Amino acid sequence: DIDFEQRTLTVQAKDDWHTKNYKSRTIQLTPVLHDVLVAHREQQQARKYKCEYIFTYKGIRIKYSVRDSLRSVLKKAGMSGVTLHTLRHTFASQLVMAAVPLRDVQELMGHRSFETTLKYAHLSAEHVKRQVMKLPFASA
Image 1 (tube, rainbow, N blue to C red):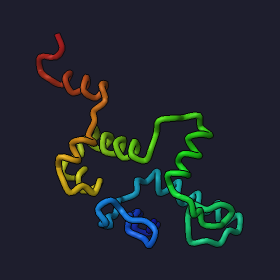
Image 2 (tube, rainbow, N blue to C red; image 1 turned 120 degrees about the vertical axis):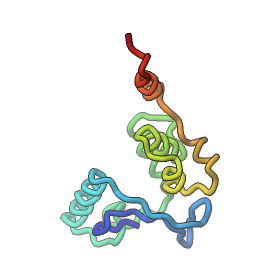
Image 3 (tube, one colour; image 1 turned 180 degrees about the vertical axis):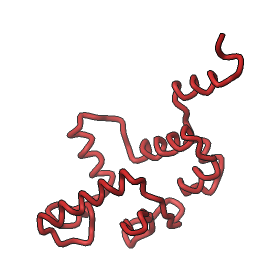
Image 4 (cartoon, one colour; image 1 turned 90 degrees about the vertical axis):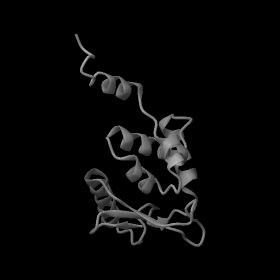
């Protein structure tokens, strides 16, 4: 559920879907994502689509799963090996590399266990290289 005024996205259980731990959580939208979603909603309205949902097919709620939608988009883009789980790993890794505290990453990911968050927090080789170069004896 997207709240455009508060600039938040809430992930919550529905009749036909729930989060892994059955808990709702609210995530702040980045300014870029907010602007993209507003523009998309305006396009929908300009086409006279009357629907409370943001992602529709000609104004009709898309009823198949997000996984199927992602698979279709990836196929059209010629990409393979990407899943929703991949996107969760990417989100966590990007947060960690942006120096977001691991406790905050745990909260944003909705993990009960800190150890689970650690499994998601991958560092890129380039990031690791930059961190090592911060040492006082790294350069001659």
